[in-house]
Structure formats: C-alpha cells, structure tokens
Length: 186
Image (cartoon, rainbow, N blue to C red; front, side, top):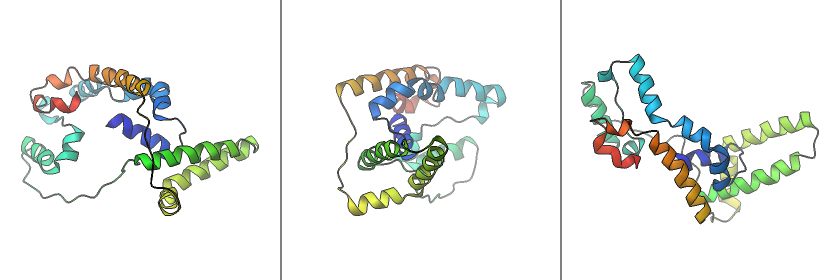
C-alpha cells in the first residue's frame, strides 16, 4: 500500500507522472526510503533491542486496538482507549486521475510565462492543491469516475519495486515479534 500511497502524495503535490511513470522514475528513491533492514539496524545502533518495537502499518489500519495493545504490553503501559481521526489520507483513484489531468494542463499553461513567474505560479498551484480546493471542485462539478492504471507493464514494474522492498526487509521479518505479521510484508 505504501507505493500507491506515495504516488497519490506525489500527484497531490502537483506531480504529473502516471503510476507506471512514477514507478519507473522513482524506483530507486522509493526502495531506498523503505529499506526496512537498514532502518532497523540503525535503531539497534542507538537503542537497546528491548526498547524497539516493530509493527506493520497495515496492522494499525486493520486493528488500531491490537496495534496499541502490543505497544502497551511491550512497554508495560496501562491500557488506554484511543480515539483517532484519519489524517493525511491518500487521494482516491478518481482524484488522482483528476489531479493528473489538471497538473498537466496547468504546467503546459505555466510554460508560456517567463522563468521567474513560472516558479511563483507553480508554488501557488501547489498551495491550491494542498488546500483541498481541487477536491471540492472535482466533487462539485465533475464526474465521480476515475481510474488507476493497472496494465501488464505497470504490474510488472510494481512487482520489481515490491521485490526490492521485500529484499530490504529480509532480516526484519525474521524477528520473533514480527513473524506473526510477516504476511503484511509479502
């Protein structure tokens, strides 16, 4: 889910690449950011192993209470009922499709301006995207349809990215506490 979410964030910030283009252009960055074994080894250098808890984000999404209970149990924290709201929600496929079309159009138009103005106009456009105005515009005036490309080529590229990410978590999923959640990493 993280790769699709990164693409949605990229589009929400004004990126114009389709999912396939994103996978092709940012494969190295994505797989380096999510090098789980490196991150875990770094934590081990600075913290006692007993003070490190590794849990999959998918468990937090699937069962917040179970996620919190594991942390509370590990650190002997009293049980606490946690009421949360959704933050930093990814764009839906219909919004990604809309944002891509808008961004491509806006950047084509911005190209006709002098360089110093292009930067300012791009910054204003990104602020408009981040404000949520585009979502309201889309939902108010335009079709509710949208799609994420799932061509064979896209699936193959996604598999390459995911295999690299999985290879970057080989040590991590061997950890005794992680084994029950290893399916989230496959």
